[in-house]
Length: 606
Image 1: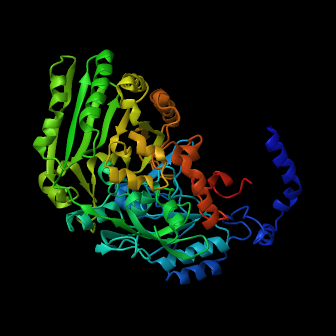
Image 2: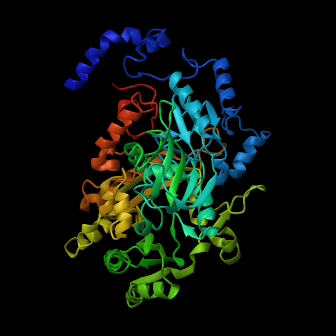
Image 3: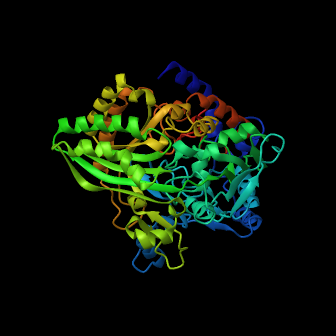
């Protein structure tokens, strides 16, 4: 035992009989107002709210309090709810509409999706206030869920009270928005106001398909707007438009004391800054967001295909040529999304672009494809397709139904809105059980002549262990000056501004919700794959020691996560946490201030 741990144990001994006493509620009451909250209560504990107290909360929120149970909890052939859940388990809209479920079913040796004890089905800000006050007063574990897409399980905790914002989904466009209190310092700008439970599919429909403008959001259509903004929020075209959080103009936030704050660059700027990339669920509950909108480019487009090398040596040469081509032709605000480097010596192309015609995009790629065709060591495993379309149709479900139905999957429920589709390539993530996941930002200096060969060597070595993708839109280097400047004024790790890409590797298996018939992930296989994922990312990051990681797409077991996720911004975020949530009401795994709590968020470490 380390000396510091020994001292902590010695200091705790006089308190131990008190902590173990049956009168735990009395002890907590004695602590109230004197020092920090030391524990939260679970069902069956002294201090857990009585039925009468739950009824009071139900009355306060207009009857919108639900006792939660997973549809898989008592799953039998005669159970209609279970059969519907089995039918819809690969439908992200169904998962999002079911408060007891999450978009990820778990992570081996990390967490498993289990419902909260109760959920407040919030429809207005006053519902959120009532839930926050109730959780604080009764020392409950509090969870907030909008889209429910957290890989880390941060929108999920058993024995908790859930604030479920899914039904807070109103969207309004503005021609000339000025944040409150900023009339003397900011000119009116086009914007969109979105309530916290809205998904990006609905924001894109309102802003782009119907409104003819652009708002920076996420690539996955069922992700919640509020969660993405709080994590930083990369989209396919972040190099041109910045992160989602960098486009935030104003937000309404409920803090741990139950107060409602309207924050922006002029009003409570520190709280405003903290929610721009400081991570969801750590500082407060966002109820409304207003985001800058942009002029819509004439075109959006994509490049798809796959190239296979016939030997290891040829694949290493292909990697080097690919990275030089990226540096010379694609390292600019027109391009985003990813190149995938997989086992079998295969390169997959999955890039998107903005502001170029199809002919212009073809001209950009022509030298690279000519290099491939001139060498017999390579073949096109999948034919290359370069497409461009009017930008207004990029999220237009009816357009894709007519022209490219193979690219989308519709919400299959009979009453589903027509615009509720997902990209076919995202279907494999729905309900996933994660085996392992890692990410790391690659600094732009690696593209310099003196470093690019070492980068290619590391990339090749990484593929010997596991495949990975370079997400160029998730590193802002090479982007527009405006996008970088606005994104720098957020809580995200500053390393993202100097990175040309975010490297991501991971693996998953089919949904494995507890109680789900036939859901039995191969845990030994999952652990073996997790080890290979670590080996792959470790090999790649030898050329980027100390690289940070994107909080929303990172390792559950991330070491030194404060530095990794937020870098030099963490002390400032921690100060905001102490100011607005001194007792730690808001807790998520590896969130700001979580080092003060046990892994499950129920007891304080110090």
